[in-house]
Amino acid sequence: MQEQKRRLAVKVEREKNALAALSELAVKTLDYVRDQGRVTTRDMMPELVPAPTPPKPPSPPS
Image (spheres, rainbow, N blue to C red):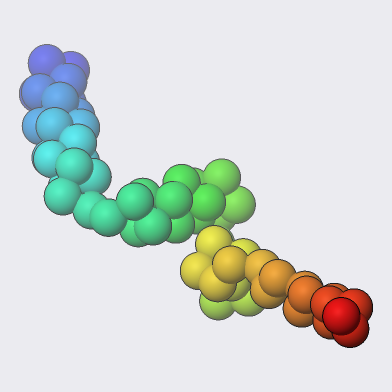
């Protein structure tokens, strides 16, 4: 039991160090995968590509 506890502590520490080295987008992706269990490119598109802004209406003639 003590050996399992020690291994888990090492694993948790290693994961903390790995997460600290990742970009914000990579951390968001990992969080999403943990919540959903899997991820597709389509699922991540809103995170990767900002929503398009609508075109401005033409200004009235002067």
